[in-house]
Image 1 (cartoon, rainbow, N blue to C red):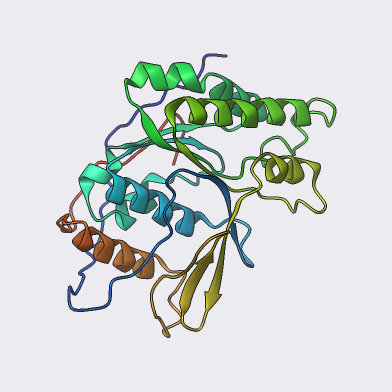
Image 2: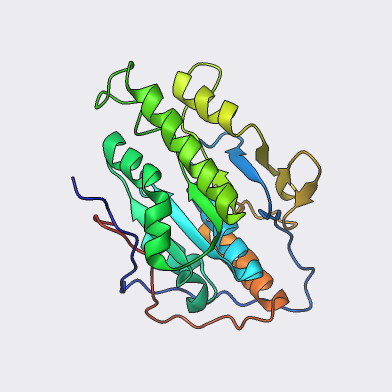
Length: 255
């Protein structure tokens, strides 16, 4: 099997313009700098939109490069394009997709070589649903945990070499899934998110962040997170771009 190579190509998906009012109170999002952590969202096993928003915000506020080892289409190009307030952000998110446990294992264990081929120094490595592809019938229970453990270990080692942060999610419950527990044990620091009547709240070991006061029930919608990112772009001095076909992020495989 040939390794999937990190690359980008054009997508025709368009983004709606999120207009930020500079007079409104600025929203807050947790910093991903300098830490490896698991995103856990209350009552949401696949927190795709929140994950995308955090990654886009990191790229926006740090000007860093992001490497995304994807599974289950979390790096959906159309969604990322609609959320992103700026074309420049998308150009710094490099995605490779896996559809089987063996593809994911190969992407993870060749991560160092693929990054070198891009000629970048990532500030963030993203691995959503890290356990999902290994906890399937495509690989035996005798082999799956070993492959996953090696994948996680390699990702952490590469992150240390580049002084990059790591953000992962897991699909299973660590209390009942060997695979999810393996991820939780390897990356014990948790970034927890819950929806409250005052807006989404993120909590970590040393902080608590209320993203944005909201009483509309829109806290999980694309429109809400696009508005948050538009405000963050304004704070960072980045112009919010109008609705035009944008440069999306894609890798081998369908959207």
